[in-house]
Every structure is written in C-alpha cells, then in structure tokens.
Length: 135
Image (cartoon, rainbow, N blue to C red; front, side):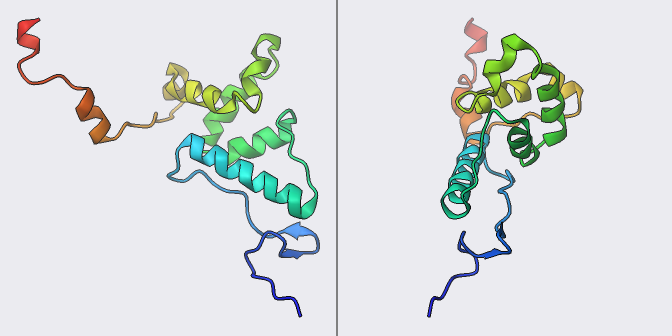
C-alpha cells in the first residue's frame, strides 16, 4: 500500500499538477525567482514538463505571479521585440531587468510603487545629526 501526502508534487489528478504556481506576495524578487525555479524543477521531475525561459508563455507566467504584474508586462512587451534588448530576458538576467523596471520613472508614472527599504537599512545610511552644518 502506497500512501501519498496530498501536497506532494506527484499528487496529481488526471496528470495535472494540483500545486499552484507560487505568487510573490511579501517575498523579495530574488526569493520569488528561486521559489519559481524550484517549482519548475519539481514539474520537470514529477511530470516531465520543461520550462523554457526563451518562450514567451513561460516568461509571462512568471511575470503574472509577480507584484505589479500588469505594469511589468507592459514594460516587457515594449522591449521584447527590440533586438538589442533580447539579453534582458534571459534566465540569468531577468531579476536584474525587473529590478531596473521597478526603479525606473516609467514604473512610477504607470502607477507602480517601488519597494521601500526597511527602516533599519535607511537609518544606517544617514549621517549623524549636525554633520550638515560642518559641510
């Protein structure tokens, strides 16, 4: 008798993986990318599917799971046909490209909110009181 945990990646119904695609939520972009990569590896191991970062469908699926997906997809659609920008959408570069999009003025103009650094990081970078008076 084989017992299988219902959240195990091989627990399928009619050959369809029941576990949903990970969403970014409160995770950083790097952490979300790693979680998605692990999800794609699970699918390859247990279902035999292949994830190709060069395929638009697979890249759009990843973008749709990110925060501000509509804005990121718009910026992606503007540059994906430009031959000199093709390097931006490779697996090794996609997180850096999305971070550049988030920090760009176009992102804010389209209604996006860039991520705010935490208070502990910001307090370390500030100068001591009275420092400006001597400069």
